[in-house]
Amino acid sequence: MDIGKILGGVLGSGSTGQIGDRIKQATSGGSSGGIGKALGNSGLGGGLVGGALSGGLMSAVLGSKKGRKMGGKVLAYGGTALVAGLAYKAWRDYSNRQKPQSHARDTDLASIPADSGFAPEQERGEGDVDFRLALVRAMIAAAKSDGHIDQTEHKRIAAQIEQFELGASEKAFLFDAFSADADPLAIARLARTSEQGAEIYLASSLSIDPDDQLEQQYLSRLAGCLGLPDELRTHLDTQAEGARQEFANA
Image (cartoon, rainbow, N blue to C red; front, side, top):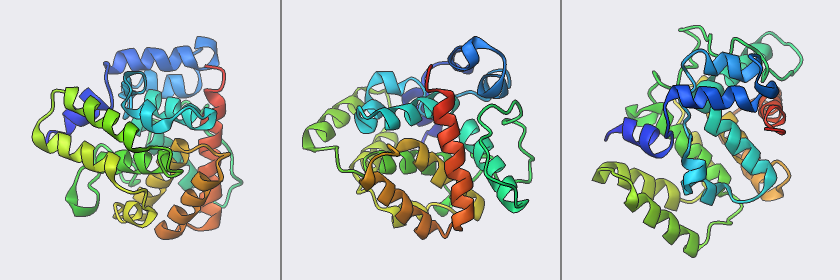
């Protein structure tokens, strides 16, 4: 399976430079602070979702709810680098018994210690697969956990997947991810470590509408399946909400 085609061609269109520019334009009125500096200038801004939001695949799953769309925008501009950076900061604060605080405006989100366990592009998930694929599955499952994807939407998504220049294995992965039930236990099993569990939870938290009861119930079940302590979950939720607020006026 060519993971680069899935992440780059389907879920992350555009060059890192283009996405980095969009990050800077979308934060702080184009200033060099926060997410823009940490991801745009670091060269780590290659979005996990990227331009697919406007292309239709993820927009079909994310739907029209404001909260879910805002989280989708964060993921589109920040990708795995943002998920890893914020999850690492949440983990660090939790471990140091600090109060939950948003790190969405920190300028060092890309400076994650090599031995921290928070580096999706280098990690292997359950079954020794590229961990970024686990994050893709987690986001899709969370976004569709309220059941708003009906048969008509499934057909439209399938038709769009067929339009991409992908091999059989890449298409099979996408078909499977979009057709699978939103099963929090199955998603939790994609994590091999507690750190990966924190990343999966944060990516999922960014993919839901925080005001949707069904999606919040899914997130709670996912936290339970991952075995996340309540305090750590609070730290992760704080990062997700802070990132949404950072992009609220973008």
